[in-house]
Amino acid sequence: MDNQESSNTRSIGISMVVLAWVVLLGLLAWWFTNYQASQRNPNQQISVQLSSDGIQEIVLQRNRYGHYVATGSINGKPVTFLLDTGATDVSIPEPLANKLKLKRGVRQVYNTANGQITAYTTKLDRISLGGIELRGIRASINPSTQGDEVLLGMSFLKNLDFTQRGDTLTIHAPRE
Image (cartoon, rainbow, N blue to C red; front, top):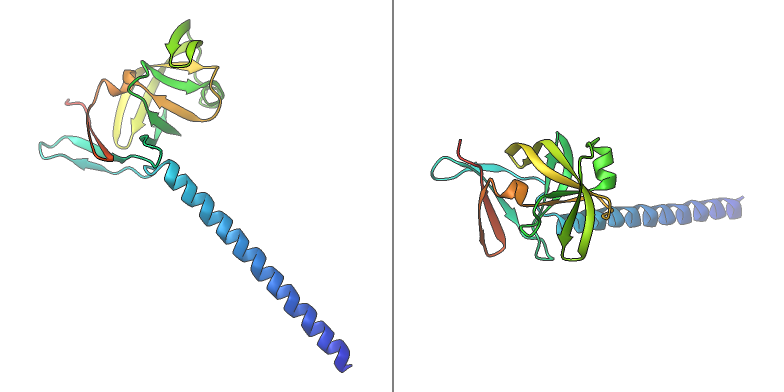
């Protein structure tokens, strides 16, 4: 009996050690995934402040790759933006445009850094970055792009004032 009890105790001990390692590895994987997401998009929670002259402003941090990536929304649905002053329009990957139920408009050829592409015009009812919201913004649905990152181009950004200093970009809402 003592041998069997000893064997059972050993089996339980081994099972507990294995379970502890599985839990530890799971927690490490969860932490690392969240860490990577925060490195890619350090602006997941954007707070709106009032500037010295009473205008709404948001401050974005540059990510480790040198880009300004931020969480926002299109027509009330959350999206991830990559700010791109070289893009004429807001450019939405086709799979994401389908999820957002955006209507394809006129077919148009765009000249990009990677050559010519064909995309489709669309109009966004609402687009928000932090607490800054604009309506009726011209955009394009890009069938050449996969993924879920929206290029936040000049059709949105031209309505705002922004200043870059070091690793921060301060964006001011339009005056009303």
